[in-house]
Length: 423
Image (cartoon, rainbow, N blue to C red; front, side, top):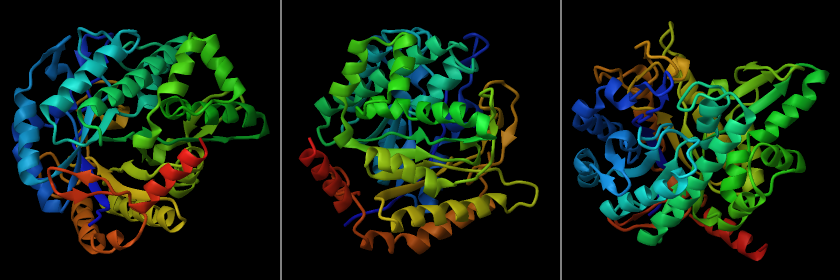
């Protein structure tokens, strides 16, 4: 039996702002620590079998080799009893205070130790996102100056990027020592930059290469000459670059990609960017990423606010689902879809860079745990399509030992065989 992964998520972002003086803990702001059982009830009521879910890293990882698993044992134990399959989200935009930030060169090795400890503690977990949205995390922390180290330089960005991606790669290696059949769902933001005019073509082309850097390094794909010079000029050493080309674990990965209306950008001749709104859409941008990496795809994040008319989120859900079906019917092996997240979020509209306490109505449920219109629509969508998609042969087959089920099919095996034949 195979399963298309209809999914949702519970946001566990925890970046610091105000130069490390304040942490934005989305689980705390949304009352998940108190209402986690109720939240899991909602997941079950939706008919969702797969949940993007992670721990509050800053509360769990107390120091090298020191962990507080109390909340983790409760939450992951309950997910197991409910037979909800977690995609374990280990690092979501922030690190514990004792590490500092993503400029710390010790982060990759330390994080790999944490990932192994987690895998040993919860051996039934097979699906992992070691570091969520690596490109976004490096950009917002070290290029835009919003989170964590709050830098605004190319050198800061490259340092954060190489540490984050190396941490992701080493964590995958560490987890495989414990769970050899682990699968890694990358959950990376998929972007596109549109030139405003002919003079903007060059900066737009550079940004359209830069958007691939995290996945190029993670999957061991050699970057073009301009991006190579950019990395070398801003602090990456040749031996660090060769590490990524040599140690990648592409064959264990699903290319999870996140798409929102704000993922497409307009670029001026001076290289300044603004949101362009949806122009290409999920199908076209996913095609660009798939043709680059040739991996099974999962739509790992999308949402939009309910809006003044009350139907905007439902309309976006239908549009994204139509794009998922278009991706699938075009021959790309897409294995899952996610409305993110389960409940409304706080200050999502300003990318968590300030603590304003503004509730963003973009969840399947509001913060009182009442269903929104999009929640009802998603529940119906799952019921309508659950028995249709497994009949198709675009799923990868891997055993989920504790549940006696399998996930994804033939397309991934063919993709792996093609990679092996091509060397």
